[in-house]
Image 1 (spheres, rainbow, N blue to C red):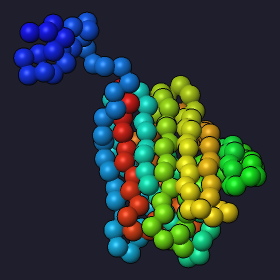
Image 2 (cartoon, rainbow, N blue to C red; image 1 turned 60 degrees about the horizontal axis):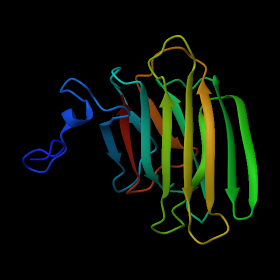
Image 3 (cartoon, helix red, strand yellow; image 1 turned 30 degrees about the vertical axis):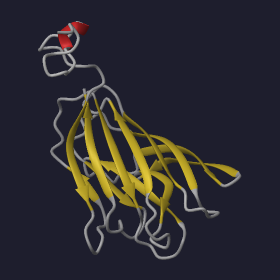
Length: 194
């Protein structure tokens, strides 16, 4: 029998120096998943987030329910806080043009790059990292990447960084479109990063 493969062909962690009490670095645990049903929803909130991870990650496929073929925007808030203590910087591209946006005293971190329901069956891929979410010695920072391609001039790719100027541990996250609602079949999953 191979020292690396067990009797059933599985990898042996002990061959690589891991013991049963050692966890692999960079592990992701699924915390919760939300899928939008018929009729849409104005926002998705993950609450009672456990404090046992180092970072959080949201992964989603999103479409806004606004009519027409336009670029929509997501916004994110923490702990139900909608005061103007968020900031963000964004760079985005549509076709051959690159643009930037920023907000310094706003009520959420915003990012373009979500198609409206006028783009039938087209959803944006979105990944948002929330860093050091339980550290009470610093403001909370996030980075996000969103984009879609519909073979049209409004196709978009967006990178945003932002912060929540609050030292409280994050226990809930709300993500919603800037206006309207999420379209049916939009989905967001929350992961904890060890």
